[in-house]
Length: 357
Image (cartoon, rainbow, N blue to C red; front, side):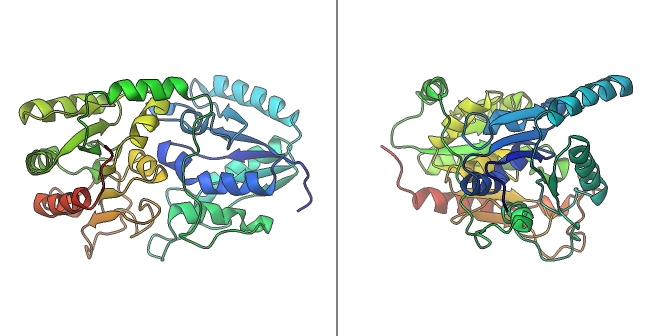
């Protein structure tokens, strides 16, 4: 491909986890086109979700972030998008990429709409997924599937499960490091710092909070574990109640800026919780995960990338791969992992890890 140096416009439906799993693809583009200017266009802070610029900004992977207007009335959105179109057309982008794994909930209708945006923005060449795979087919991990979108560029790509996957350090991150040190000052030396995510943005993925309490109370009673709770402001009350009702101690990172939360995660030793963006953050920082998975997605699709992780999932259910956001079954069969099995996995993780001193 003879673009030297190209202007690259990426469009993606970025949330917290989505932003993290595209890192190897961004690294591949940077390595192939070191002089390229990369702009990432995505939703920004829609419905209170974490946006791409919050997690990837200042890490050397993306040079510029643009927001796809999502709020306001139809006329207001139309005017905002026309202004964005005129702004981006002036940039004369050489290459446009719809950079998303070709799995549901992505649809070809959305791919085609994003591709149309790129055409309207005057992009010279467009790369996008050509088909959406069925949930019942064997899937690559989303990290590898996102990377494979770049295969149309004839770039050398790593084999599946061997892509580089680590969150680059934050440039000018001294303030975040200082904030993380202050938050972790109460963690006793020699204790295993266990990152915990009690919440999830999909009810179909939620393990009962009472089970979290059972496991953490026993784990803290039998091992030297210091829980560190991550999540949004809505998770803060859950964590406080769990600590107070079970006479436990820990650190709360709930509702903090992503730069500080990532710096705190770097100071943790492992992760326990749901299949969430926090889990992918832990994996991106090299932390072994004990992850609770529903059966709504195919096996392996959203697993934390890399080695050393333990996936706790109920397999063999006839309703597997349903893709449901809210489980239609009253007994929620795919989130019935026993507290005993979860405790055993966590105790094994803690006892096999050399804790920082």
